[in-house]
Length: 278
Ligand SMILES: [Zn+2]
Image (cartoon, rainbow, N blue to C red; front, side, top):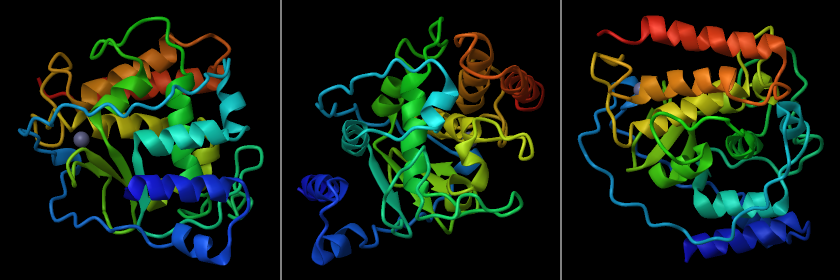
């Protein structure tokens, strides 16, 4: 029921005809997560998550996007937003400012601020939408080693929510169950409008891979401290490593720049070298 109300508010909101009362509802603080257990990189996940209740929603018409810039410099459609909000519970400690999107940015945020500034310069809600659009848009030429599904379908099967938190020291999973918690400073960071920002050395590709890492914790905890024993056990680090490797090697050649491709390949190699104890 709550979800239906939220969706209705969103529809009204997107049509640009918010009354003051409705705006108050849409800006109402969302439930804070009582995250007494910080699983982050020590996620213990002996619990097998319940089988996914597939939310039946009509599939989004996939745009023929072949380049990452086409995603990042455009805005999610109303249909995409409704789909994302239907597939995932997307919540925030701080209610985001009024939603708007022009060329991939919410002008109600000062997203053009200088490079050193951290957090809250971009709309975290739009950043989450963009990560989900990217997860759908990446058209890999080879199946992943940990699932036969596409990235978005796998994510949807594993998590039910994404919470953007002001208080957590690290992004983590799974409190509540099958909800991943992301640091607001990371989600709202200035470099999230780029696939990889040269000055930051990261960009929204880092957030996409972080989300998939945390989503893997719904079924796999770390097996060697905050690292994993082997790639073969296909835990969270292996998913992150493989996803980076796939992004570097199995996307259309014009999807990203050469710099971005090489940077992602280097990230994959670094994880391979540093995150496996076995
Ligand atoms: Zn982890």
